[in-house]
Amino acid sequence: MKMSFMDGKRLYLRPLETTDIDRCMAWINDEEILQFLGRRHPMGLVQETEWLANQYKDEDQLNLAIVLKDGDRHIGNGGFNSIDHVNRSAVFGILIGEHDAWNQGYGSEAATLIVQYGFQELNLHRIELDVFSLNPRARRAYEKVGFKLEGTKRDSYFRHGAFHDTYVMSVLQSEWRVE
Ligand SMILES: CC(C)(COP(=O)(O)OP(=O)(O)OC[C@H]1O[C@@H](n2cnc3c(N)ncnc32)[C@H](O)[C@@H]1OP(=O)(O)O)[C@@H](O)C(=O)NCCC(=O)NCCS
Image 1 (cartoon, helix red, strand yellow):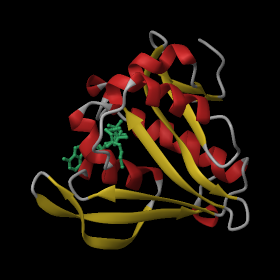
Image 2 (cartoon, helix red, strand yellow):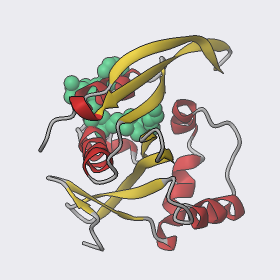
Image 3 (cartoon, protein in one colour):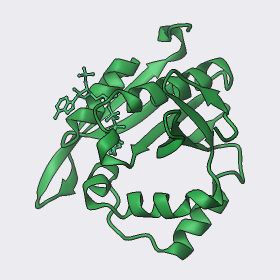
């Protein structure tokens, strides 16, 4: 196990390293994943290297590697964008890049750790996210973590020749369970 930042039951979270770049690049160029992230353009090594270098430059974002304890396997990344210290809010994001790791509870376990860190260590008041209607698995995973649906942006996302809705979900510090 490399440096663990947060320890869960079956996985741990650690900072991203330059040796993770090939995996990150494969995931961010995977069309099945891209449709869920809203990204359209490919990412080459130059952009990916720049993205990684920028991850730890400022305090308003946090992106961590999600690693299975079994086999010390890096399966995805997750964290916060746009951490706002005045409004005490942040935008949550996650990507389990390895398809064979989907639907096994890893995404919700990692999200729970990250959200807990947001509330208990960063003292956030509100954590929010957007999820597309074409991604019911993600919506269900977020519900399991404790995110509540607060609105629908109708026909806001165009993909595969059609418009899809975007759901806005959030969880407040006062709603969060202490673990
Ligand atoms: C979204 C993601 C983070 C979820 O992580 P995960 O480990 O696959 O999800 P979990 O196993 O924790 O939970 C998935 C839940 O959705 C359910 N589910 C799966 N497919 C579903 C579908 N088509 N409709 C409704 N529910 C579905 C699962 O049964 C499970 O619920 P349950 O535990 O009540 O049975 C992960 O799949 C992922 O990163 N996908 C690709 C990128 C992505 O979508 N990122 C999020 C962008 S908003």
